[in-house]
Length: 628
Image (cartoon, rainbow, N blue to C red; front, side):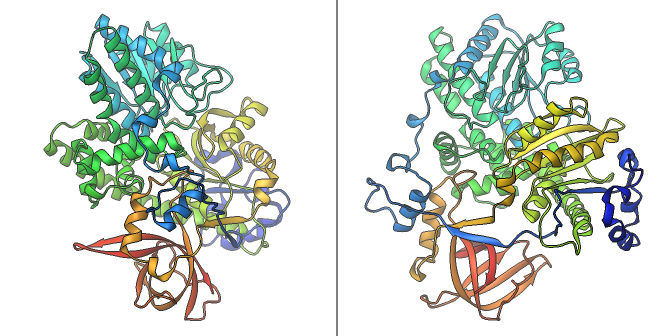
């Protein structure tokens, strides 16, 4: 085995030697001793030279064949957008009555029976959550609904990311036992907790697993499993988030308790529907595919928020983020509310976020939301530092080595925070257009925690599973889904993992060889670029993963441009068929495109609303710029 990172890179040793004076720790990172290295990177190759930048983006327009049945008064642009996403006329106004029936979810019905038994017996129920926004909202949903349904003894526990890691581990089972529950209900975790479930059962604690992550070959020995992705589960809503699974379990529980005469059926429905604000937040935050069933859940939750029916914690998070809850949309949840909630799980303990969501009065909610906002500022600063270091690694590895891209990227720095590596992996993935896994030291000496992000066509959880299957002694624990995965690794095995990870990713040649596509919904006429259509598009969602927000393309005359905070490009542009100037903002794009002649520019953008000092105006949010 090579003894130095330089030895492992063959012909690239001289490249690293040239950057060593600027980043000396990078060059002393030992392959077999990653836990002590100050910096360490791998760019996994399959015989091709690489560059840090993405391949040129290929812009394509979504085909849109209008179906019959769209209302005549529906804006033509919105008709085009819906048609391009294959949304039928019956999907234009999502309503709870159109949801996949609760009775179709066999696992949820079984979980409801076990929970109803716990209520009848007066058992203590412990909700075991997760440290992300999906897990936090699912935990708050279960705790609040169970208490409202007459459960007298409900507590919750969420693992500290750094101390315990993810899910129902053996250590968390021992911690849970100190609270003396009769039943543990996992939310957004548990399907891979083979040892933890076994330990809980040994301690005399029954376990009900509710989860949405893909199961492995072996299922935990829980008394009940509610997971739409289990092989023997016929429920068609395979894209539910963890909070969506919890919602179905609670809806089934309400029916079961009503059938047993324990609660009025109408009261049960009111209780469960009252949690839709949480369901919307967790579903958007977890980036699950917004199929029609999920769009119903998100739309209903957003409607409750806009109507003033959100819980104090969500109202406080909107306020601290500077967003108006009266105009709440999915983007507010994904880009403003969820990051502040997630900050607790990333840097400290998600209990703070869950307590904010469970707060019953505004004063407590505001106080906790302010703490979450402060943590989010700390997270942003830490993330910016780590991203800058990651860019150095990638650039150093690829400088001057050709125009092709690596198949995968594997990054590590001993100073990185394990709660933020997923965000770094995501940003680098966006930069290079390839699967990326980023590692940080774990709390346990000699171990690393990694977070992987992927591209369309490369199912990253399956890649990690394939590595684990081919190399049984390589990976500690892992889990995830198509676009994101997490894993633990012995620091001594980082080099071996890099090689195995590269090999598996390289099998997806079609996805890797494909162009870097950017899909648009075509051009907008000059008369369409205004506040009216921006409002129509915002209200036409919810938009998100699998049901993307409308993106348009036009050639504009650039009247003015300037850089804000050394990071963002502010532009004033003119549509050739529209008088006047429209503002545009290109976040995290401080440079003008190559070949820009100072006048015309082709811009790919979202038509959005800029709200500043009580003034509302249309604004272009720029995804991509290129010379005209």
